[in-house]
Length: 409
Image (cartoon, rainbow, N blue to C red):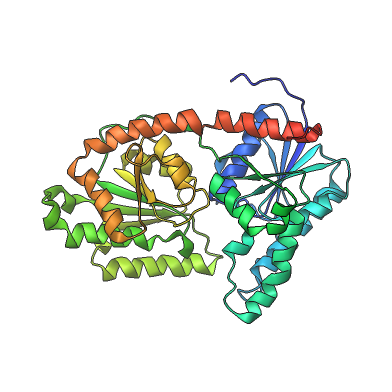
């Protein structure tokens, strides 16, 4: 594929944990696209499990450099934020002292590294803010609020030190302004760079489509996966007669999730979901798959009827893009990033985050399976036009080249 000419640069990307997830997918896509423009790209991280990662991190298109994997992720399941900061600081210091200077650095998720990286005045730093961390953390007790107060202050101050701030949606941009009031008062405005999906990896669906609803998400409570189980149970158990459709008895639900046995929440939540499926009488029709490969995920997408995306107020959500690129409609909550990516009634349905509303949307595809094919075609074209890797690559390359050259927005 021909790329426009641009200055070749040495680019460093810092990401906390190069596992499997939406944030990691964006970083991998950024590294691949920037390398395709001829840049020398090096990814720095504190953890990279070669048995649980995206295949591109092993291909040699860009280098992956791991520093600080010996540092703990938590201390007795507490102090996660402090440990994340320490791990990323170690990565940043390793970059500074063990590597020559880079033209520009893309820092992801953890902003505390920015002032360290700016010690080399020749280096410019772009920060990608997926969502303000202070909104993701708990502030439920006085002790936790005391613990989080300096961390939240550091997050805002260090974020504002970047030469350019990028966010993943207009929803996140508005949240950024409301959350970081000091930065907003100073006129700091992030630019929106939507994550992307490689549409070329998905082929047109064939006749093997099954009456299977597919959920893809990490096994974390904030992903609200129980909504998919409850909606499916309502469809299968309580509303079977209402829909007067014999085929609903053949419907199934597959729940695929990024799973890390090191994380207690992953282990506990998976067990909670299994118990929920058993309690609601659908355990024989719900299948759980942990950390499948990209090829396995693509096969599941090709065979499913549609994709259920259950997080509420998700700041972006890469799964709806992947589903639509794979010619599948999406049922998602009518909040956050999906409002910007899913066209309600054309490429899927945006619903209230209730089992009843999700169930009603699912019933549309049970009653008329051809609806999934029609919406799927619309969805694929929508992603191709607006969210392809080619568009993403052109935008991120322009941002980084302009910042490295000292251009102002």
